[in-house]
Length: 151
Image (cartoon, rainbow, N blue to C red):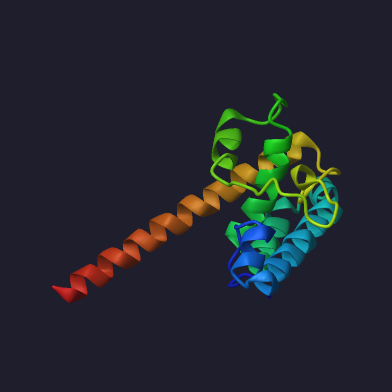
């Protein structure tokens, strides 16, 4: 559904100044929908051993980048939590978020998956990192094939 829709990273202020508020709002809405789906499904998926299926569904619906972006906000919010692996915390720092208040909402709490246990969060994010590495390897192979065809 939204997997091909790019994540809009600039702040709302930037979007307003550049006449891109519709892009910002739509991206924000989809991010919040993704966050809600994670909150609703993660514990159940973990307990029923369907975490991989949930992750595949999230990627299919929201895309790998958006899913990682939303979860990165939760990881950054819980950076004190030792149950999150160092690799997960390090990767999550690659995402940056606007700290600008929008419609009275505290921006540091946007996209936070409050209902997601830290151990499950760590496992989900590690699996997303694996998917990201697989995608990068596939893209590199595709590029190499394309480069060979050009010769």
